[in-house]
Image 1 (cartoon, rainbow, N blue to C red):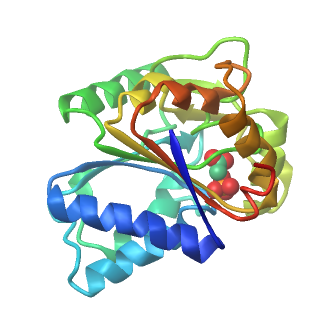
Image 2 (cartoon, helix red, strand yellow):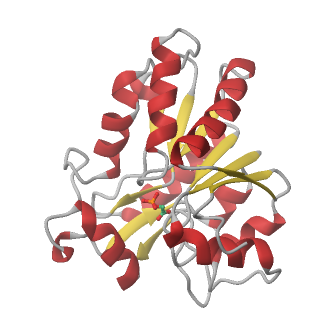
Length: 242
Ligand code: PGA
């Protein structure tokens, strides 16, 4: 795990873009792991600019998103599906058939999970995984718990995650209580990982991640310590307790 500190949100977005642009140019058929949330939006804007400037071509790129709410129609404006199309896919030349987002709909969510893992495995695995970090140390929706699941699974969201995510909904009762998420295995098998963190609210989790050595299910992001090619990109606020 190595980390770099940039001045602000624009700085971390630009640093992440440099990694992505270089990677996509060298690997035109790359498999990207993608994240939702506030943090990747700056990077996504730069990727769109890169496409519009003809610097980047996504025509052979595939993507797998980390997670999705259970029970929300993909067209619902708060679904992660809608988020990804609005903030990235609608504006670049990625082929819709190469976009993968777990489905939180249907009778048999376990089957959705197995199918998602099968698709990731048959694509050859994720080359470059983008992660955010929850204030509670979650990655994707792998929430702090007594034990964690390796593969894609359905998870009950923690009350604090529901509270944090309620900013996108009319009220916190509307936030789905469950999500479908990649497990630690899919994340840790990624050949390279980039984790972005911005703002003072993330400083405690970042300090715990970087300063401590323990690997614990109560702090899921700590599993990144076993990954040899992880780059953490922080702004000064997120790095303020280091
Ligand atoms: P955020 O979410 O980018 O909206 O802070 C990150 C996360 O919860 O993983």
